[in-house]
Length: 259
Image 1 (cartoon, rainbow, N blue to C red):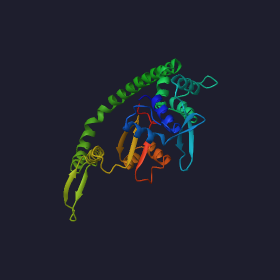
Image 2 (cartoon, one colour; image 1 turned 180 degrees about the horizontal axis):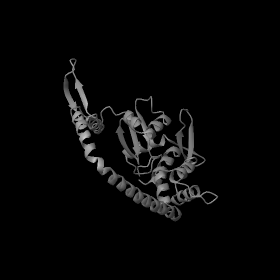
Image 3 (cartoon, rainbow, N blue to C red; image 1 turned 180 degrees about the vertical axis):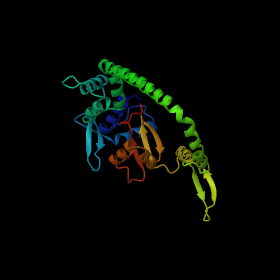
Image 4 (cartoon, rainbow, N blue to C red; image 1 turned 90 degrees about the horizontal axis):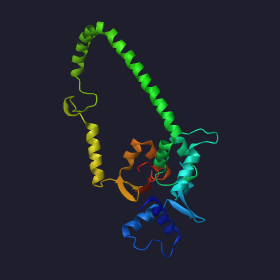
């Protein structure tokens, strides 16, 4: 189901009480439509996406733009100011997201800016300057290496003693288990990777999952605390959606750039 088709299905579900689903819609698809519709409302025949305001029990209503041509027009209007200045991706998205919404808006903004000849010319010029600066930095670094060769042997001898002392100590990234007598019992040199593997296996087995992410109509079960601790975006999104205190929550991540 395309982006426009999914929005039309949601709009039909919210407005047609007698026949909320199109003929032939499967039961699993109906369930996904019902879940997604919780984030939308129809006013005067226009579909709006409801975004919860941070720290408040109020929503900001954003008009859902269905037509591809109108989406492109809105991006162009936001990207180029009245004075002719071309805004960057983040600035363009922020202007659009104040009033409008559609699935994959951030990716489409990025694609449109890539196609902008003015922005491409500006980026090529910046890349040229960066390459020149890199070459100059490489020359300076080579000169510094040459001047340091005279003291290299003396430095190596001093470092040999230091390396010998450091090699006897455990890697700072190792997790060390010590008993009550101070005797080392176990090393876990890859503790972080071990924990990630366990969390991923729990997610695959649907164990302890307390958040359902709805992306392009597909459901993904995962751990809310892990997402919130790894990403400020997810933390703020869960706050907006009121998904902090609830035991189980469903979040439509259409806004995020997964497309």
